[in-house]
Length: 365
Ligand SMILES: Cc1ncc(COP(=O)(O)O)c(C=O)c1O
Image 1 (cartoon, rainbow, N blue to C red):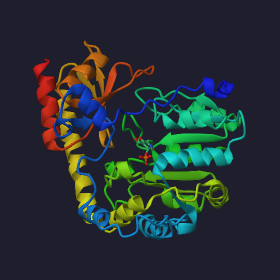
Image 2 (image 1 turned 90 degrees about the vertical axis):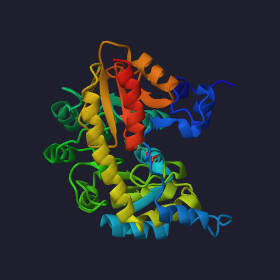
Image 3 (image 1 turned 180 degrees about the vertical axis):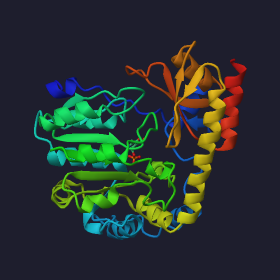
């Protein structure tokens, strides 16, 4: 049997190698590895979330297909009513679901690379086409081109990441207003919004999530993977306009969010002081690490409003630098894609993680 033609053209998504595999390859025990390659939270789940997991009462019972308790708690956290909220097995699942619910074969999905890789992947597996509007001048959106193509109705959906992955830059509010006036569905991925500079309550920082109630063409995606340290449990959520929420409920697998993830997410929402303090630690460490990386002659860090720092590498090969760091037990992200081949992305860890990284980098000067 042959693969269907459309699948032959799709390059499989290249995920980060699992911890155990890397540990075996490098010959380092897991606890000695400094993992700064997937923007995970180095502090892990909050104490209340760990306790909820330890005390899980009903893992033998299927979860609530409508995630009612979680959606009600999220309604309080975000200020968006539960009818607009859908929980998913990570934000990743929601990206796929919303494309499945909206795309007709060969319709175009606009993306603005360099950005998160799953938009392209999911657009292609859902029979769509990808329309790229490359970022300009050091990762800024090419707003004029987005608006030109948007007004021509060239694409049905636009994905925007705010702050963007991999550079950590924020799109200005005024720019978003222009884009939201276009005749397309805008999916604003706020996976890292909790780490942006402006303070305020965790659920609200510079977010557009509350606007989903008023706008028919805005989706906001969020996740518990980053700020709440639950990446391994796969819990994300999205705020959707009514018409799209209805379509997604029709096609969603019933038990998409498991009981462990649900309980850990609920407990995280009851442990906001603790998690908020950890987010502040990561933000402070981001600023400290950025300043130190700027002093390494072969690195140029970009200012970030997220939990990672993109660095341009000059005078040496970025792939070799990544390999040299790996050999010392320090994992960072390296990209082969155009425009990023001379970059590495470093997730912000604990101060002791930064010290290990800096010691290896300084020894290379
Ligand atoms: C921009 C962006 N969106 C979504 C995700 C995926 O989030 P989740 O772990 O909730 O699937 C990531 C993960 O790295 C990301 O960088």
